Image 1 (spheres, rainbow, N blue to C red):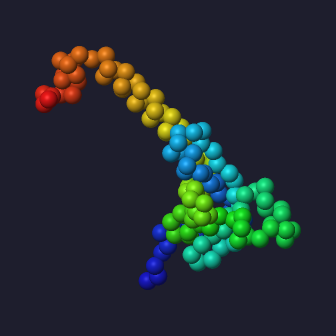
Image 2: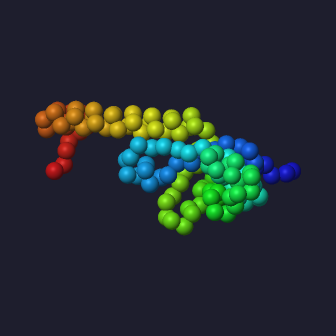
Image 3: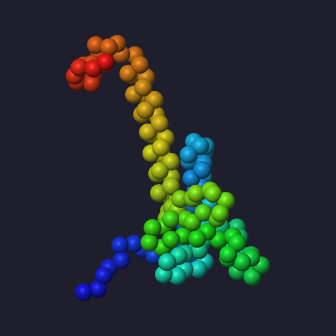
Amino acid sequence: MAKTKKYQPLVVGQHVWIESIERFLRQEKRSIDEHEIIEVNNTSAYAMRLDLIEKYKDGILERKHLAERIKQRTYEVKPSGWGTPYRLWLSKEAFEASVQRQSDTKIARKKAHELVDKMNLSKLKKFLGGELDG
């Protein structure tokens, strides 16, 4: 019986989106850049930003310098050496859903904080369903 792969390998020509995690951690406006897979092997895939693809196809640019290396099994984007970590998204919709969840969570936390701030100790005890040990 043959083993089945638990992951879908990236293929040449596939479009992926890459986000800088640094922006996410700093709570700045999150954004992604669209990339195209230009080369693959058993362990890695190499993705280049769409605005650089034509120069690469014309032979002006080399893959080594401007392509992002992605591990095939984990989709981890290897840092370029400058220390900026990246996250790979297989679709733009998945990224947008993540941004929406982050926004919804932030709003829900703010509402919960406002609700609890207005409670006195007895209401807070009742809300938590038990005694508060102080």
